[in-house]
Image (cartoon, rainbow, N blue to C red; front, side, top):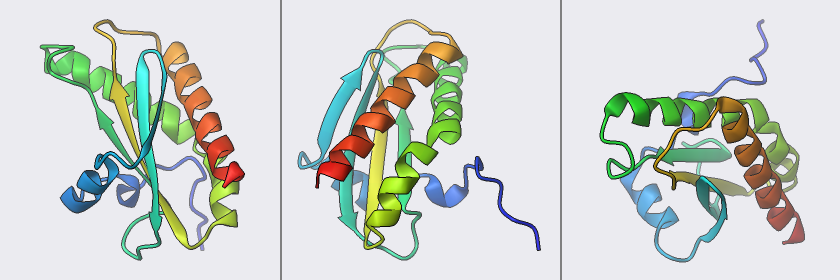
Length: 135
């Protein structure tokens, strides 16, 4: 039997459900920023059909008119999350009855290097883990 790769980003980790997205952005979630990324997150009761952590990545058409650049930024954020999601895994194992919804929102009008994006995502995930530990 083959073991799942620890850095894999599965379909179940993508936040696609309109109901869950509306739940994330209902104004009751927490938010923080490390420029050029803003993150909105919310802890919800456990649901069977979604992963312990589900993410959504949004890059506004107002920021980048060309889809190529929007997709590049989304790819950078997704890759940074994939490589650093273990920062949240320890906290989430302590709370098996909860799911975490995360939305990454791009705030800048310019592109950044993948290294800078990864640094921002790492900081944000660390801060989310810290907030969850305080609960």
